[in-house]
Length: 128
Image 1 (cartoon, rainbow, N blue to C red):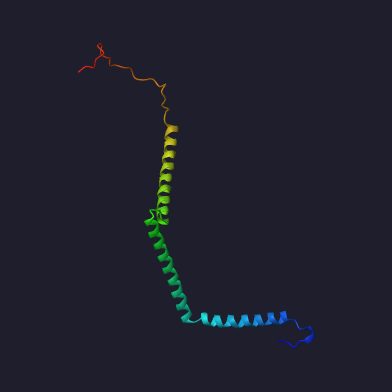
Image 2 (image 1 turned 60 degrees about the vertical axis):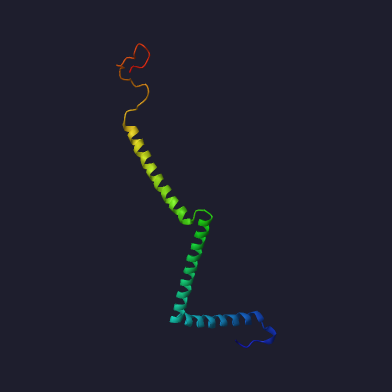
């Protein structure tokens, strides 16, 4: 730090200079530490612990939901996939029915019926 006139001494400038120097030293130290194999092994272990913890918590949540007879995330995912498949099949059916209805002749109740050839019995009682 440069010599300053005591009458114009600014404590905030001194603090800012000290803090910048401290940050440079700390960054240099940690950059050296992160380049070592020990640090890499440590980070791999921490990551593995985190993944194991997440898996354990997921399993516990699934068991709790099962005990309460509530659906789990996997249940909802499976249900949504099944619903999407049903909707796709329904859409395909609607499309095929829409095409066949437009290409075939309309069938309504006013179409002529074939002639009736069988006559009812005259006695009104069913014949045996």
